[in-house]
Image (tube, rainbow, N blue to C red; front, side, top):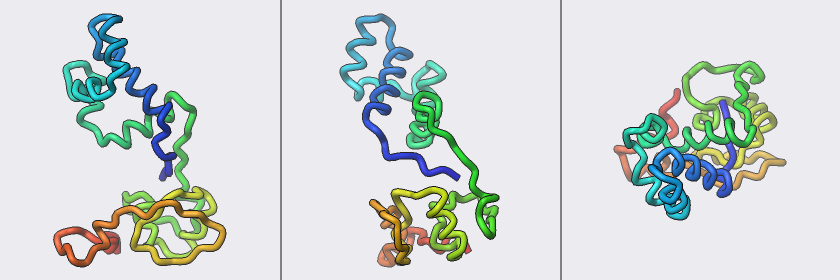
Length: 152
């Protein structure tokens, strides 16, 4: 389980500068690419292994791994720190509404998340949740969208 930070712009810029080095055929092209991140993004999925993976993987996972490698963030498995560990394959943040109050309290204490799913209308004192996500999954008017009931 992890709860990485928001995309920090200087870290994201450094990631694109790294990709500009990989994509550039010359120092002059590297400078041009660093000034134009969109040009770097257009080369993602290209022939170079790093850019190929960057273009095929879920972009936020790539960013999270970058913060571990370049900025010293850590990924910590909190599963065994919860009162009633679940082994669902889902992130505890993603299924927060379904993990039960003791696990929710422990998750909040251990992770101090900045966001939670929108379907959690639970009041927790001492927490400052800045964003609710998956609002599309909570919208009952769109039957084709899964709701937070995807984990029983």
